[in-house]
Amino acid sequence: MALIGVTGPGGSGKTTIALNLGANLALDGIEVVVVDANLVFPDLAVYLGVNPKFSLHQYLNDRNMDVEWLLMKHRHIKDLYVVLGDPSKGIDRSYNINSLYPLLNNLKRRFKAVLIDLPPGLLPKNLFYLSLVDYQLFVVDPARAPLPKLETWIHSLLVKSLESGIEEIGLVFNKIPMDCRPMRKIIKGLSKKIEGSGFSVFGEIPLSNLIHHATTSGLTVIEVMGHKNPFVNVSRRIEREVLSGHPKPLKYLRPLQSPVVG
Ligand SMILES: Nc1ncnc2c1ncn2[C@@H]1O[C@H](COP(=O)(O)OP(=O)(O)OP(=O)(O)O)[C@@H](O)[C@H]1O
Ligand SMILES: [Mg+2]
Image (tube, rainbow, N blue to C red):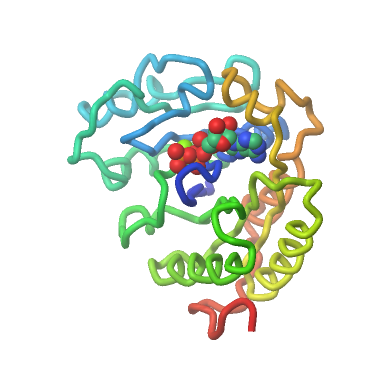
């Protein structure tokens, strides 16, 4: 029913966030599929420690393939499905997000939530994708920009996203060193301003050895940290604001008039 694109710069944590939000949503009884749409460096299969039986790359070579074959059920978490790319495949320039349109359309009709783990960077104007996507979730690793520049950096991210035609946008801050009080203070202030501009900030995920351990061990954070893991609050907010069918109305539909900070 809702198609959510998970995006952000390289290494910010898109795959980790897509997988673990999916897992937590599924734990709440929501049927979720996480699609690895990084066709050049697909790594969801690696993060799950599995080999895809049928991969997206095979589907792209044979569009008549039954979508059911592509759906892999998580070994423990009921209601969590994944669609995996084949990490061993070389680059094929004829593949792009457009090629996934029929598949995504099919999944959107079938699942309550479709989380798309997108390749790094902003999407170019892409009508097929834009016609399907309901929400764009930006993963922001604040260590990617010097703290004083963080606000300008996020502002430009939001404006560019609006310019590319996506207006339903939310942020997740990832890899937050919880013991770094100055950074947390800046993020708190920034989150307030971003929310004041009509965008959602779904929360902060800590920089955590256990989260990293999960991704390198083929596990979800639920399996490592249990039901009270750091993704719970973020996934609950997404349930309320994105999946409830009543998304928060945006205050400004066009690019912000001025930077988030005055
Ligand atoms: N909150 C976190 N705490 C600790 N490590 C994390 C956290 N989030 C992600 N990581 C680690 O950071 C690395 C990059 O994460 P991930 O692959 O999810 O990023 P990505 O944005 O999908 O990268 P890419 O752009 O290459 O697809 C991984 O090693 C992962 O284990
Ligand atoms: Mg990734």
